[in-house]
Length: 222
Image 1 (cartoon, rainbow, N blue to C red):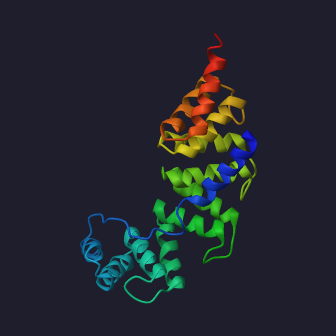
Image 2: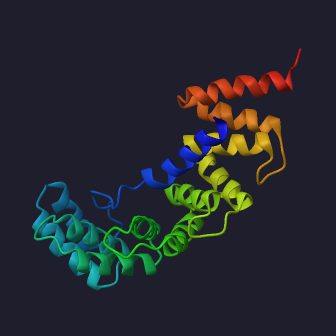
Image 3: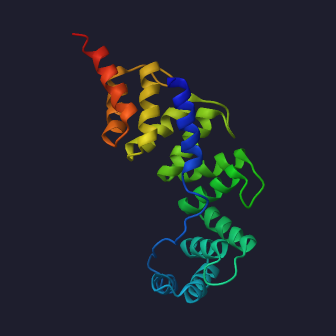
């Protein structure tokens, strides 16, 4: 049951985050057009927001490119235009915006709006993960854990699950704990297994709570 639970959990972690693209654009940095677009968006004046985001996007502002992509793909402030939206999303990703990189990775992973490619998905997840984007770290870890778009590599999976767990991801904490418990991709360490099960349990994972108690009994047999 433990192996099956881990497989199902890893699969859910890969598919459950970032349901395609963010439904709302990200808040602005210091840019007049971007700020005006955000004010318009916050006031539900989507057509005006789209126009200002486009102005900033055309000046190669990555955040504006991402926000414009969201609105084009979602059909906010005008007709939906997935092709153009993907073009702006790719520009933002290539400019180094982690959220755009992650979102593009999700599209490739699912074959949504683009031809499915788990290899391309892994490459984009890796770029965003390296910048500390937690959901990308989870997805990248899961690609290595399952051997999707990358060779199966528990050591790499453990590394990225740990980074996501350190940022508070519950599912990653559970999988990482199991890896420490059994020595999969890491040196077996029951103390770290107990610690990460406890972290997941503290966030409401009842199975993790049971596992934490089991591991604690191994550490304190008396």
